[in-house]
Length: 352
Image 1 (cartoon, rainbow, N blue to C red):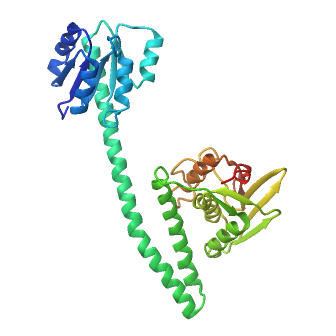
Image 2: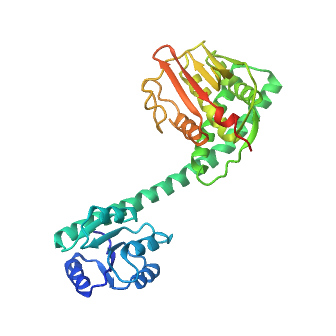
């Protein structure tokens, strides 16, 4: 091992402490030992150990209670705790794991077993730390990309609008504007993925006709690049109660996905209203169809015949729908097309 790991042993019997110290002394660990639970907690706060060996049966504060106290400390909660005990019932072992233990070793101790289990848990803990750091670096990297991406996208958008006002509409300007909207949609997905755990998405009252009409208008230029016509129909307008940005992610990702997989010079039908006693939003394309319906909501899933985008859109759609209790029904036939049906009664009947 590259690092000298610190192991804290907590057992009220001195002979057990001495024995465990003897078993581990040749492993090049920094061994700390105490028979007192509160002293162990304070010692861990002062200098965080890499692993704790914790006896269950101790006076005043038993191992289960000490484990709970450790897990409540933000700086200590990730420390792997291996319970050591003469108790050998299934119930005791289950309770140990429920309290947050990562392993359970029964007395009398087998030296090689103790050494092997400690090495395993230290390696797992090391891997978790590395993964957490990688996620932090990934998060920072994506945030930097988003920051660098936002400014040029805004400049391109402003200048294409200016070009269109000065020179009139053209296929070239329309293609640029469509590409900008694709980038904006990707930006929106990345932003939601990064901020969803920390940002508060407040619910507001949204008129469905106004909202969906605005999203159809937003995607009109992108659809035009493939000569796709977006048809919007409804039989009953209503207000929904949901965060506007989250509803935008659901509708935008479904429409952009429909455009992406539609055939050239086809159409996409968008409907909302009442059907068979339910309030629904329905988006239907006549494209290539979906290869694997069981996989479409998995993050980074992409069809083999269209390796486009990041594969995050429908994963975000599912997350948001689950959050608001919106049921999704997907019907697809290869080479014919795909229909997404959202049962939105949960957000129609909700209130602010």
